[in-house]
Image 1 (cartoon, rainbow, N blue to C red):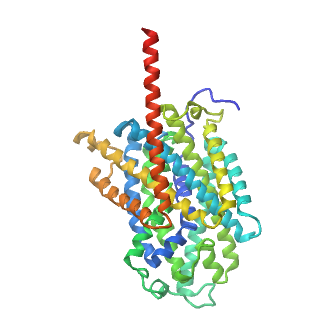
Image 2 (cartoon, rainbow, N blue to C red):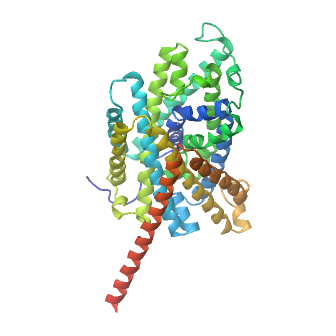
Length: 464
């Protein structure tokens, strides 16, 4: 493969690309499929869970945006953790993000197989998983502008369809569209055990699955290294997060749980598709299934992109093998893309061995990794603010309201989410795996530092 003459990423992503890449990464499997588990835990009060988590996620994104606009870096929060917290923090943050995106991609390709099973139930899931991996690999080896353009159209189709579905749902609620002219109303939100049908505790327990749905949105910071004008594109993308949350998460789930009883939703497919199937609108259900299929591909696309750019930046910092910094003639970190695809092939085997239980375990593990990365972002922002004088804070182009205090409040919430993962028996194994991952990283960092010290001693002794 022809290599790039310069080891620099190409700046080919516009505001339009970045905004829809964030949509593609965050509005995907966690919403279309993972929401079923959250609804099962909380009932209609899952709407409140999405609002609470959405506020925290927006705080995290503003904290990241503050640093990204001040100092745009392709390795983003890994570089900021290195600069403001120390080399070990940068090492742990970067590799945990790569681990997060790999696990999220595994969840996405698992869901892709489940979606395809709605149409072709006799075909094994692992066949669809393999095809998804190969397709996404081909897309990620193209030029970044081509990748951004494809991701834009993937996400745009998804956004238009979700809006259309929400409008159709509102028509069902008030005018009985597709329900023999009988308006469904919104009584389903309290008719099956009340709004807090599983109690306030049920809503709290759903928070970890809701946080999984938001995972991946931090890719906005990663795009800073390839954004044409990061000082304009990053703030615009981040400031669009609140309305995205209200429309694409809270709005859609409000409609779904209004038109169909929440306690009759299963986890054998997307609640979006199942709702329309049960209402007898089979054509709409097929269209939505196609949407969730493209949504999962879009999310996997963004996952692979994020890992590639993170590992490229880490390789330049010396935190990853130098080969990961190699670029193709198209300016793509192709080695990291290939590595990501090979790692995702593990999902093919897991889909064959445990197709039914795989998603929940992977989703909770992804939540742990996501929350850990978000905690490092907040810690980095707090440390970043401590380095600035009052005058420097006042001149920041995109400051987080409340500064370090706001970040500290969000940090407490994230610690609570980690506790939830350990509290639920079904997800506890993910906490143990996550803690094992941290121990592995600490061991790796220790060995790396010792190796560097030995190399320095050898150089000094040979020079003497």
